[in-house]
Amino acid sequence: MSSKKEVKITCPRCDATSPFTIWLSINTADDPELKESVRNQSLFRFTCPYCGVETMIDYGLLYHQPENKLMVHYAVTPENEQEVVSMLTDPEKNAPFRSLFDAHYVIRVVRSRNQMLEKLAIFDANYDDRLIELYKRDLEQAYKAEHPDAVAPQILLFNTPENEQMFQIIDGNETKGVVPLNTSYYYLLLQRHGKEMRELFEENPIVNQDWASDFLLTDAFVVPPKSNNTFEQIN
Ligand SMILES: [Zn+2]
Image (cartoon, rainbow, N blue to C red):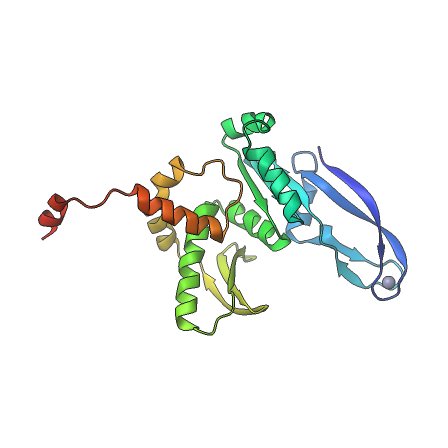
């Protein structure tokens, strides 16, 4: 079931106060029209009824798409993130989620609206967000090699209206480039890491660039070293 509450927003232009609906949680099986309202961000757009100015209102919510066994929780504060992650991962607290884990639900916790929209774009296009994070890590390294003065590039995947997957490279609050997803590279990453991925981190709700770094450290540990035999055969 979706749940919402009414709040009062003061217009930044004319100072008038008007009501605005904030969604605490969304269930797309109950309210299918909200799927699009999240993706086009109209759910976060406040239009002042007095002067017409539009303001984006940032608020956290739980997005639940049961038909695709998908849950994305957008935590606006680190405290909320910690609380939700502990509810999901602490064996003493996560019993209510057991049935979802058993049903192979994808459950993610994110820290910004952009990250939430990116997760939805990834799952809408039927990609694995863990592989996308590994892909982004490689893209970031390539970008940094070409731009030694890069500040802190952020890369986000999005779907074009033609349903093509593109990576947007943002650096210093500016879009520096757009790179199409190369499916051959994606499948290469799948071949390289798919098996370890299945065995590790299945229930980790945070999948971001830190996750990708941690995964590669563990992955290096899991992959057996090449034996001398193989080495001789190759030569
Ligand atoms: Zn106004």
